[in-house]
Length: 291
Image (cartoon, rainbow, N blue to C red; front, side):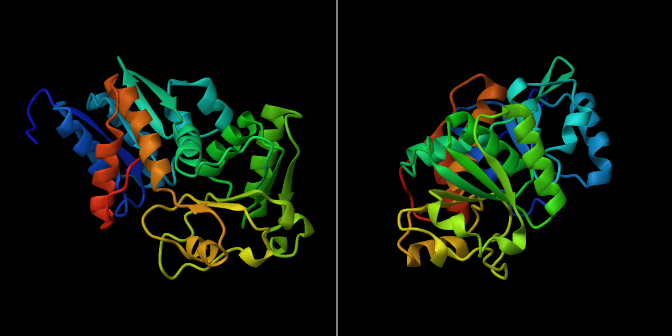
């Protein structure tokens, strides 16, 4: 990679970022297509988010991805937010268009693309349980409701955050589908768990080997699809799903598909999905798989 005075800068805002695969897969894509871009990680603490957002303009950056813990808070510092991102209440991609910062959300579509293409699972008409209430959960729940799920149960360790997400979704989608909030300590005792068709972990739990399994998959019915957005390792949730012979999928596909959409927003060109996957798998030490 040659960096010069015309090199365009993109990157990712988050805290922490040591685990991020995004620089590897984006820079591999830029190199393959011989684009004069570079993708850099920027460790941005919450109290510095306003300064970081202003730096996108002052440094003439093309844009950034936004990850934990900034996906919701970044909205306050943008000039414009797409209707879809506004609906989700979270932004994961920012474009600097002639000094105006525009917020997008590619997480939701990235999740659906992964679920459909890799999981071969159609969520329409399905009953869903969602663990989490942060930026990823907002994007995933919104796109699932738009896809036509039958019902949504939200579970979150912090009850207030769960209530905020449930209220937000009901306000946006009205009576599109039933949306309920289950108290966290009731998640393993709720009688309706056997009727769930899709379980999604939209939290970072599972990113580290010492993380505890947050649900009892023994209660799920055969055929319940388990999706874990964590992508850096095979989580305990996925291992438990495999032991129960439940169909399951990790979050690497979601990462790659959402990244491809961000890539296309910044470059106006088609993203090389396979190259991005190969770069991510190489960094994780995984074998090659088709996308």
